[in-house]
Length: 190
Image 1 (cartoon, rainbow, N blue to C red):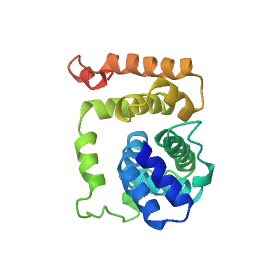
Image 2: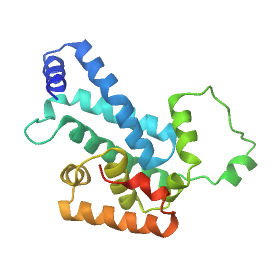
Image 3: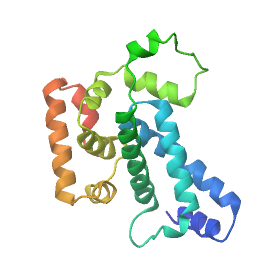
């Protein structure tokens, strides 16, 4: 943590290299969180870039006495994910409409996003998590993939600690109904 605080102080003093190091250090974790909540690598990449850019531009707003840097950054990321989900609801095009319009899917070279998608998208666990409501999915992903404490989750999700705990419990109960016991081992508390 002191390394992160040192990088933040250096960036606030104008050290561009410190900003680049902060970005590089946080990028994958922010992407994984966004991907876990959105389930789409392209959207997750855009959200991750937006969240990191906002955090770096507004680094003076970060207060280490209020939260860890990762908690602050994940709060920004979850906010950007929610914005993306709201925008998507208003601009959904069905796959049938897309294909009827003569469009096709373009194969790109394998990138980290595609490797993650291939690893997660095919698993029953990932599919089950994607069936949860957005608030329960947020709680499950923040707890089990991003490994936040309930207090950190409450800060990120802007709710009381008890609500964060309740959302994890309800999400886990819904997953228990559709996943086998061996698949539920993915949700063991650390």
